Image (cartoon, rainbow, N blue to C red; front, top):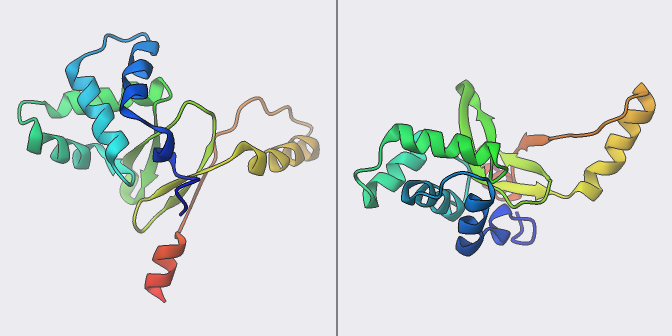
Length: 152
C-alpha cells in the first residue's frame, strides 16, 4: 500500500487537537492520548490492542476510557470502525475527507479509496436501481500486495 493512499499520511498531531475540539466534546488528556495513539498506529487496532499499547506509557488510563474515546472518534469522523473475524471491532484514524477503505485482513493495514474511484460505481447503482444515493461507506476486505507476496 502506498504512502500516498495511506490514511495516516494526513493525520497529524496538531490536527488531532483541532479535530477533537471541533467535535464539540470536551478536550481531555485521555481523549488526546487515545487519538494520538490511534493516529500513530500503522494498522487497524482493536480497542484492546490500543489499550495495551497506551497502558505501557499511561498505566492509569482505564479500558472503558479507551473504548469510549474510540467510539466518540468514530461518531466525530476522526476514526473508522472495521469488523474483523469473530465480530471484533478494529479502528483506524481517518482524515476529515469522506473516503472508502481497503482493509488487509492479514496485516490490518488500511488504505483510502478515493471518491473518484467509487463514484462511477455509485452512479451505476443509482441508475440501475432507480435510487438516489446520498451517502455511501464502502470497505473492501482482502490482502494487500505485501501480504499476497508473502503468501506466495
